[in-house]
Image (cartoon, rainbow, N blue to C red; front, side, top):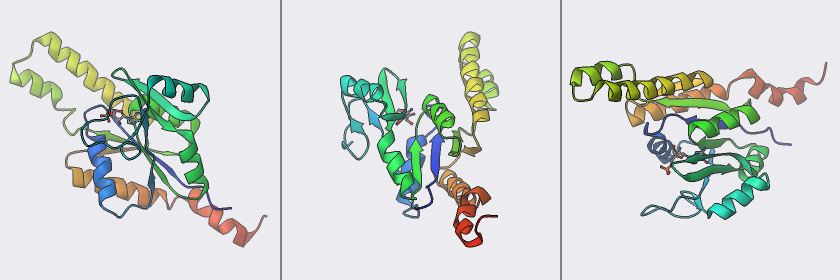
Length: 204
Ligand code: 5GP
């Protein structure tokens, strides 16, 4: 039986550029993991292709999938469902291939609960720490607006605690490099390498 593949989860606050980084990562051509295409109830945007960017389905179809236990995780985001079909992930991992998910934070936490062996990467904006100073310094927003934005930003930083790695998205190409570095190292973890040797060394 093939050694089970590794599950990599890229997540992070909305607007941080997860989609852009994921696309750039796959465009390098240097990746040998499989991208899990998500299912969504949102309408396709111009240029998006069903079965490539997403599986675009109706709300009824999505809810049917949830009821049948066919989703690894799902979340509602801006009035639409987004989720990861379980079958593709399981089958691909069983074939020994690594699987890559790009999902929002609530879904990532469900994967964390169900798949503790997965690798969780938090993509973070470069300027969260400076946000307060910038907002106050700019002097254009009312203090309650500033406080709201800071509260949101702080909440976003807190989410980082639930992840294994933090990647600053200061430049897309740099973020891609960092993710590749993480994946290379994760593949060298003893727990992932050891199964290759177990047959050779036998049971003690
Ligand atoms: P968009 O509508 O811009 O394509 O995606 C909106 C948000 O949904 C993004 O943050 C994206 O990462 C997230 N997303 C995409 N696919 C999934 C998924 O399968 N599950 C979850 N939980 N979030 C997803």
